[in-house]
Length: 176
Image 1: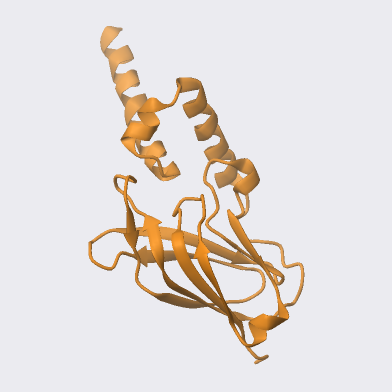
Image 2: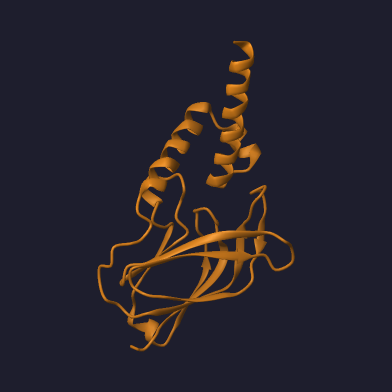
């Protein structure tokens, strides 16, 4: 009986470690949390994972070209340091979500950034454990200036990638 209990406890610890990393916490941050908080965050994570990742298309807005020009992102496996990421550009149509790899400039680290667009609002970097931020921790609502392109500077997010000092440019593309 003792061996079974010990094996079960070891399994729970391993699952907990994997889950904490999926949430984006360092070992030190996780260990400083109460077991009750850990359980709540894991329950929120499970609930968020069950939700549909695609946004509902609320408007047939323009296709967008989005540029991640500079900034830093928190990257696994340790989640204790932010790294400058390589420039990234991608197209986004209404009703689409993309999970983008962000690669560090000078190391072998990388992370993922989720971006969704409902035709009016671009939502970035959702939280994996805060229910009210499960669609994005920053939002950019359509502005006619996007027709010429507009750059947002000094962007900080609190989701999985935790962008800091980022510059993000959004340009509406002409109809195809």
